[in-house]
Length: 447
Image (cartoon, rainbow, N blue to C red; front, side):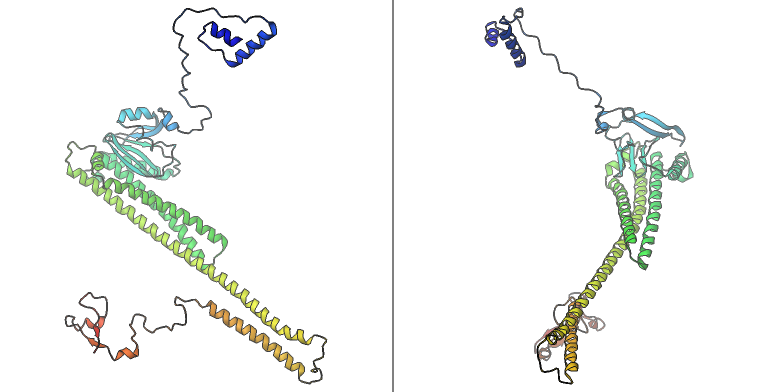
């Protein structure tokens, strides 16, 4: 056998099963011994070849998943402003690794700045190398002597962007009257926050117009198209309210963290410079109050929208109840007519009743039939009206004239004695309850 031959020869390698089967088939066909490989010198066997190295680039069908983590050389497009507000680079293309090495940042810090990723959660990150701002349409890095403005994802408002760039260059000029002694990074941050606030107010005006229009249309008539418009406007209003609250939360997080505020003062030479910290705190608090006004107005619009939706639902429910009541009234009338036809059916049989010869028979039977119709329909309609009356109280409870007054049975009125509290002034005694412990209502005691 082939296996015994290999063992007797003392070989250190095993032949694959498929190769062994092929050799066995050849041996049985030719009746010749299989060729043997020359014996090698004794020694350690050669190590197996190393596995193929993993590809440094993702496969072609990778689909773009995880490219932010795999490729460290992502290209970012940005515009750079120097210390005087002048543009040194317009829409320049830089590697992500180069920006991180130049400004002392981590790769994860610039992940939110990547223009290919949509901006969902606004953030203000304070780092030793600069301030990373990612709010709405603005993605920027503020340093103590320059500002890097990155391209925003899906930004279509060129007018708003142009106004922001003009305002930024205007505020970054040295010794500008609008600076009020603020540091360079604070003036840049102020320009960014002002642009964000303008964007929120512009969008609020648009949403307010949509909301007012659809509410006015619903006051006149309620139809399918108007309800669909109400749903779309409600979704846009909820999305805008979420964005406004997210902007407010981003500013509040910075205000609540003293370490981040200290890192944001990039021009500070001493860690205990309280004047610059006060200026930054006042700047953020002012922006927070203005954003809070936007959030409050949006919340009011959302409340009006919710109230309108509830009223529309009540109106639709009322109309549905009216249709159901009409259906029930028709059914009750049909039941009454059926009760009248019962008498017609009884006298329609070809049986002798000895009433054919009576003069009043037709009038009497017709009157009884009409009476049965009216009686059956009247009882049914009366029962329906009683069931349609809806109240908070269950059962035949009489409405009291004064729901806040305490009514005592007549049998106990003789046993009640009113004792005024001596500590209460005469002007406070008629006021009744709700004035505290010593201003309580007069005590009631038995004689």
